[in-house]
Length: 159
Image 1 (cartoon, rainbow, N blue to C red):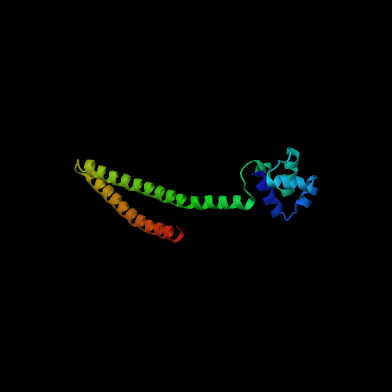
Image 2 (tube, one colour):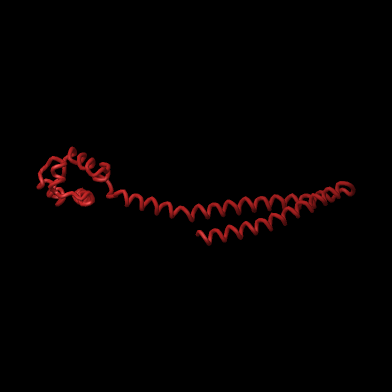
């Protein structure tokens, strides 16, 4: 593992085994043994290697990830989140819109059920309230349908 990482970063830095050995302060044979897996660099040499290659110690002791690999992983994670966010937005919209329609419908039914029991002035008020609520429901259905159309079109285009 460490041997692969040393060789990878040495090649990436366009260094020969000899030039790396000079930078670390060891013999060329020591670098050859590290890359062959025959020996391990000391902690002091690992620190020097991380400074030379400008990578963290985790690069040598943990998972093998250079900067390009990390950026690709982050981009993949971001791309995977896009559809989830779009679905969440659509779901939230439908829940809010449906709740508003349900409240207006219940208010209209309440006005019809209890508003027409007493003849006289209350009947006209209940009737106007019911008509107003039903018009609001119709308007919300029309606007909601258009917004749903736009949302579906957007999701298909950017989906």
